[in-house]
Length: 461
Ligand code: AMP
Image (cartoon, rainbow, N blue to C red; front, top):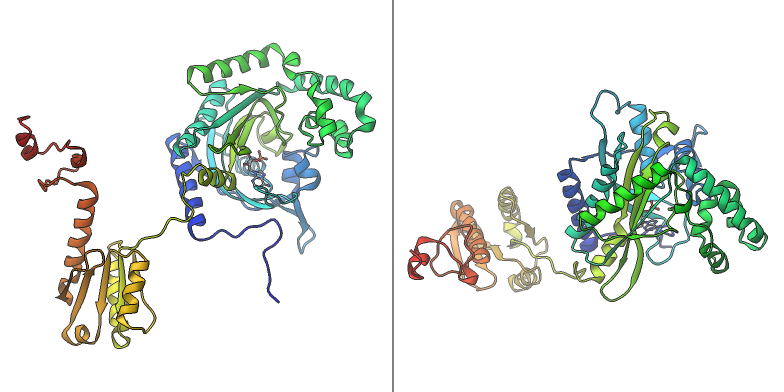
């Protein structure tokens, strides 16, 4: 019997996998520009990291963790998010000692949550995110949000909606929680079981309830902004004004509380509606935290971070036509050999690969006509053929697959001939000017060639 993938996982291969890598590379490049460096925390952590870090009141810890006992009866959890694990690394290695703060890290990789699988919701999915730890400046909030915004813009996403809110400091939050309890208490009996336990563990989480009747009740609850301390209020004002000055569009959303317990002060979420009008909900989110590092045995230092869901980014990029999932591959060279020339051809292919050309090799013993059809199908620029004659004469036939022109050259000239052809192709891609100049900065297609010849012709000299 066939074995299928585990429920909630998905297989990523081919163009989709290539797109994930491209997305991750772009995000990494932006993070590097902001001078964040990579951290690769383990997938496995002691369950305690997330129970203490993410918090017992969160849905993630209450019901979504992949937790098991290992062979020595330790409770281990597959990370449901990166932030708590990164704090554990920082705490354990005392990375905050004797350095200028904030510490700035980015991360990328799979996370695991036992959620009900549905469209865009998986049990194993990929996140990319950043954490900046050890500095309480509100300008760090602005740097973080603007970095996320830069990332989404670099990907080409135009309809990003940034929702932002402040959860205030601990005292603000505690008085707000009391106010929420007073508000929800009369309704509680008729609310869902989840809300009943949220009421005890973290009443803020009731604001995220998806049950329509409960959601209806939550709509009229008091807003946190009424409970913010002066300090929290002025911090939030500064962040909001900063976004304004930085031309970053945002919306203040009183109801935004985020799913993880550790947040305080600034929280934000990136929502996306595709050009076709499809609402993808959150493609990422994050916020500031105060107690997380200390909770995991480190210094009493605040931090801020965000994470994007790579699956969600991929879907919106496809939907908005910024990624073509069916894009055809093309290669530089397809190597075709008769059965007795197979080894010789493989050796030449490997030698040419050292220059960085993308080379595919035909393993099958089939007629040359068939192999040439395959070369076309693979969009090969050059066909490299070694048949009986070539093998006997120490030559190789090189065919331009587009023009069908071909030449047979001695073995020792192959590298040079290929190099010429590749260079010629690059030349054609960049220069469409008849003058044949090599000026890298010219843009000959739009008549803007700035080589001396052309300028003379246009009477510019
Ligand atoms: P969170 O850590 O819950 O704030 O999630 C950060 C981002 O990860 C979200 O904005 C989503 O884009 C993505 N995400 C969260 N849960 C899932 C899931 N089950 N499947 C796919 N993506 C997810």
